[in-house]
Length: 267
Image 1 (cartoon, one colour):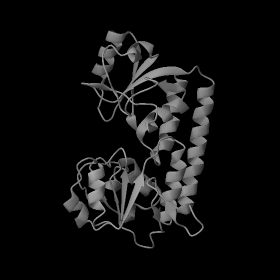
Image 2: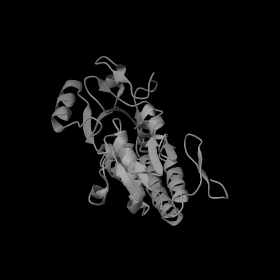
Image 3: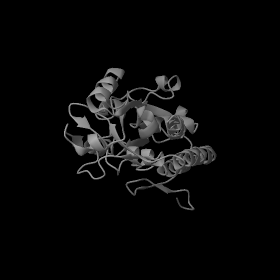
């Protein structure tokens, strides 16, 4: 942030305050929700079909495809002045194509819970919502502090956090998901990986070394039958977890940190 009110995004682009009437398109589900939490819902003119929160309010916003398959013609028709994207969520070629007709592209790439403070401040500075952003920071700090206090009183555990099957896929430690779980005292396996979302075979040591296995609700929607089958085949504790707890940055991160604290308290 600068004294002039300008703010830099994760790509290093410096953005001036948007002024009184921005038209914002968001291709990132959790950040669409953040815009509404900052009181900016009336400025959101386009979203993806995966942008489902806040459930009632977001329905009035036109959809422009998915996070990976954006309908560029529909996006152009929305006439956005600002486009919110994410390095992991959106394809580079989509973002590059959108730059031809969207004046301001805001690139995000949070890699740890603490990056939410920067997200709140960035959006608050750009869209005239500094007071609302500061309030979110205070709530976030309370939730993170409570989670870390809870985790400090418990034994750290190694977890295999699965996000896909056929093949099995997990998360590397340089991801937002892994960093969030670490704050809860849960260290993801494998400790080293060749990619950020590695596939693992049935003979991978992570199955043996994990204290528990976590099945995320997204992007693959694991069900109770998956939990039952894995518990039987591995002999491990297997839990279904809401993927929004661990992977949704933005305003939902506050709720996610609180939910993780409750999860850890239950043992």
